[in-house]
Length: 223
Ligand code: SF4
Image (cartoon, rainbow, N blue to C red; front, side, top):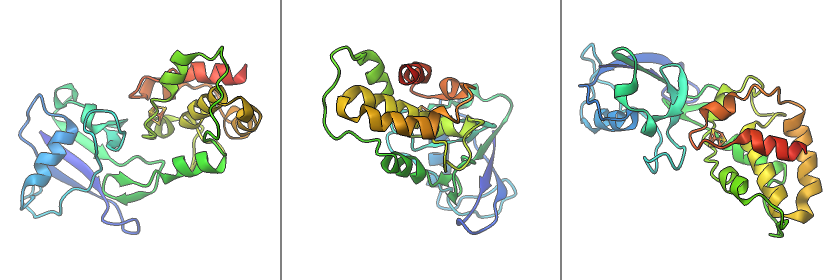
């Protein structure tokens, strides 16, 4: 199997493509494949040239942390959950998420997701949930990994300057249902940074690795 990777040595250098060969192991994931390639002391491209180890991020390797989010064959996905057997054709194309600044190779800086949550006061001050809260939806919304896949596919999300996207909407719902005293503040943040910009494309729902029913969070917040 050929592996084409869009590489970039630093945030300030130009990106370039590099191609490697990987002996196809059908039960291997993209994350496992990257690990195998990097394991070699002398990583060589398909043309036989030495190449530096491939930079990418991971932590749990079981779809629970979101660190390995990248674009795999033109679709944003988690590398640890994408199996080589599900790749169509004989080439895997890997690119960093494009809505975030590239740090190095497949590593991007997603700190804006957390910064936006902080700046919009989307954190709980005091737990005082409404007795009628929908705990199932709260549990689902709390599964957000902040992986950024929903932002990558969202047609309304640019650089996260005004519209903060689905991850933010889920957190707004979570705070509003956990803390009665914060409902009004959260409502304002939700209006300014989500409701005004969302066109209900709902690509965020399809792509989410945690299958969070974001539409339910949105409809509860709108209500
Ligand atoms: S809502 Fe889903 S896709 Fe978006 S950041 Fe959270 S886990 Fe990732």
